[in-house]
Image 1: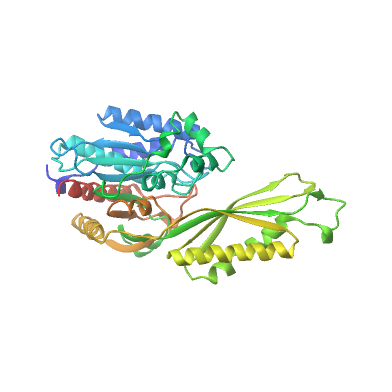
Image 2 (image 1 turned 120 degrees about the vertical axis):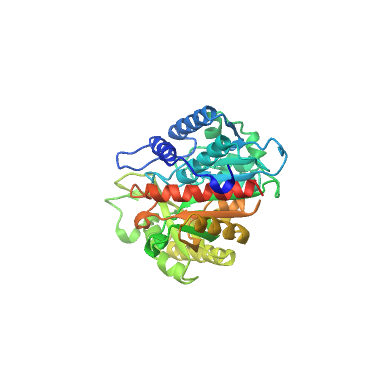
Length: 415
C-alpha cells in the first residue's frame, strides 16, 4: 500500500473520541479535564492501554508530554515526523478541542503501523501537557522549546492555587526531569496538527478543510488591585477603598483599550478572585487573570502596556494600589509555506474544498514552529462555537480532516 492509498478507520476514530469525552464529562454535555487532574490521569491511563493494545510504544517526559512512536526500522535515527495536540480542556469545555488532533494522531499511528508502510523516518504522536494553561500558557510545548528552571517550576500555580510541582509529583512524574525537557531545533523533521477551527469562517464559506497560514500571538498576566477591607453596612460608599470597583472599571474599559492598539487586538479576564471573600465585607484585594492577543509581537507588548496603564488609572480613581505580573508572551507564528502547499494538495486530491486562513486561537503549533517546519489543518466548527459544551464538528468533517492528516504525515515520513 502506498501513502496516497491510506485512509483512517472512521468508526474507530469516532469511538476513541467518544470514549475520551467520558473522562471529565459534565451534565451539561461539556468536559472538564484539567491537566494532572483525576480525569486527566484516568484519560492518560486509558491512552496507554490503547497504545499497548495496538503494539505502540508510549513514553512520558518530565513535564507530562506523551510520545507514541511508530518506528522506521531502516532509518531509526532519522528525525521523526510529529503529529498531535492536547487532551486537557478548559472548565466545562468541548469534546473536540485538542481531543480531535490527539485522537486523530493516534489513528494515524495505528494506520501506519497496520499498513506496514515503509517509512523513511519515524512518526511520533505527541500529546502536549496543559495546552489550556491551567499552570502556564502552552505548558508542555513551551517545555520542548526551552526547559523550565527549577525556581520557575516552583512558582507556577494552577487556577485553584495548587503548585505545579505538587501536581507533577502526584501524577508520578519526576520534578527534576521536568527541568530537562527541551528538544534541539532540527531534531524534528516536521510537525502537523489537526484542530477544529473554533470559529465560523470555514462553515460560512462552505469549505471542507482549512490550511492555517499563521497563529496569533498571546500574552498572559495577573493584576492585583489592593484596597481596604471594611464593614459592608457601616462604611459609607464615599469612604471605601474597594478594589473590586477599581477592577470593574478596568474591565469595562477593555474594548477601548484594545481598540487603541489595533482592530485585531483582544483582551479577556476569565478569572476573578477577591479576599477575604465575605458577602458582608468590602474586599481588600481583587485579583484578575488576563489573556491578551494580537497578530504582531510589537502589538502584544503595546497592548500589555496599555492594559497596565488603564489599570493604574482605575486604581487611582478609587484610591487603590495595583500590581501587574507578566506570566508569559508567546510570539505570533507564521506556518511553513511548503507544508501549507502539501496540506492543500492532499486535501484537493481527496476531493475536498480548501482555503487558507489564520488562526485567532493559540496552539502548541506556534511553539513547535520554532523547532521544525509546522503546518495546521482546520475542520469546520458548527456555529463557530468552542470552549463550551456547544462545541461541535460533524463526524464527516472529523473523518475528512483525519484523512488529510494521515496522508500529509505519510507523505512527510516517506519523502
